[in-house]
Length: 141
Length: 59
Image 1 (cartoon, rainbow over the protein chains, first blue to last red):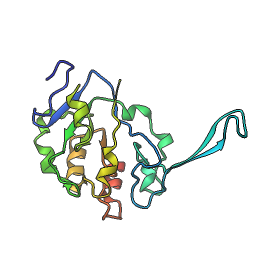
Image 2 (tube, rainbow over the protein chains, first blue to last red):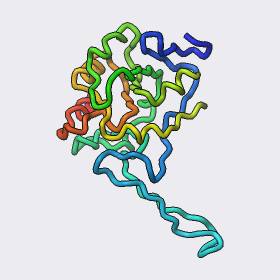
Image 3 (tube, each protein chain N blue to C red):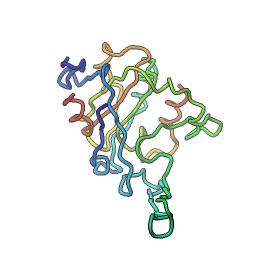
């Protein structure tokens, strides 16, 4: 465990973040990757200072699953609840970061990949699966 | 607060890592509260019926 209370990735590929907040959100811009078939992200200038208005206004077109997001029940269950009905505390808690960088792109994570972490997981934890992207951020903490 | 922003998201593209059904069942069995993943979806692009989404949503 390092000085900030995080287990290193060398510790069985298991990292716990308990004493520091990390913003995991992706930057949303016109080039952000979207799920195949989802709407592309568009930024359109509506008014411009000094040109046609005294304020800058931008219209943003975005899919509800672009960038960092939460899937609501309603996403795949027709009578499921929307994200506005989910209590915020559902998304707050101790996070367990699982390093899945050993899994090749296009391959699935199986129960066998999780089994080695059984002794380190407790009821009510939040899982965050990572591949290569966040490792640098986590290990520098 | 540390900020995690990157340009790697785009590079992974649609050939991303996802959860197999056995992993979801393991997560449910261990009473995991919430699951996040840094790829485009928890479910393979080549599965259209949404079994992984549904199972994680109703658990």
